[in-house]
Length: 115
Length: 414
Image (cartoon, rainbow over the protein chains, first blue to last red):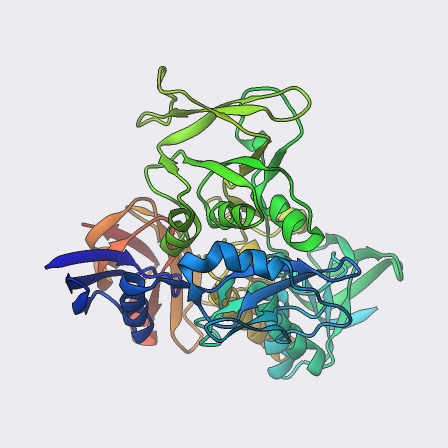
């Protein structure tokens, strides 16, 4: 049995969550205050996920803040950031607008500001 | 000109106060904003994690701002952008200046102060060394990267582990810079735990606790820094120096409420919060002048700013509609291990619960928060852990408020 100690990053509370593992099986999760914390800890020991937030430039040079509309694998972050930086956008952009479909595992890249 | 409510600042505090004041029955509201856009500092906070309490989902700063901007515009509330307020008098006359209006005056029935805060600078820390280019406050660097799309440098050392510093460590890394170290003079980070994990640990950026910058090198441009370990009195320990080659230094060493207008108007300030002294309605020592958000106390979360600002908005509207209240105020004060309590006064004549906000001076485990009125214990609440980086709250029900005689001191002990 192995106990993995994590700090949940889902919200600013930062709960100390403990996951009891037996090999690659999760035996027990404790210390979370909501279901988000439980899901985070479960994912974190198997396949850690993060939402990526960054900016891209429109063809005419405006800066658009963007995010993935769901968490994506942490291990792919560097490659995904490169992919995001290469996305070309133009014209009026609305908050929530999809700028790139299915970046990975079904996550889209969306604008977070009217630009 | 004359208006019922004038709000200074269109950041999250000003926007939330405006909406709530409007919904409480006052329609003649104007917001004065120094920048060309609404939303304040949220516009440059492109990371997520905002709004979990207020909207039940994780939004980025611009998304959170947009929700409130839409609410303000839907209500037809008048906004003057690029408008700087030069002064406020104790009889609520505001002098402002803008490119379209020139210099103008507004007589207000009620004023809501929502100017936010600014960052502490290198000058406030007395760090020795030369004065080269490449030294920025973390928030300035954030504006360069996220609003203008320009990188302040490539090799970075950050002083201070406040949230903006941690967020910028990640942000600079994502944009291709190398962050060599984050130095924190305290034995603990002043940032949120989640930011240590996802901004530093995720990118293998080392955090040096009990360390500070003791030298900045370079004549025209930063060429390197020296960081040293500090002792219990925060004095650098000789022989612990570490040298880093870098071209950029970011400071994330705290925020100061921007209260120049408040001070000049004659509003009483609290030495600990550096904001106005208020009662639970967020009314200051000048009748009809209210304050909310980071200009009143530096909050951890924008969600709390919105919550607090709605209180100020509601009571500013009541002030306009019903006039001045007779108050029966009792004083609140910070006791053992507590750095401040807000509100600093409670008007016992008002109905409803009062939420107390306070910060602790050190980390304590399995502790008890007590409210004492003289010898009498008004409340006692057990807590598993409290840390200085995170604001604590206690809800004081009306029946407990009735028990307060003279004043209330909030303490926290093992």
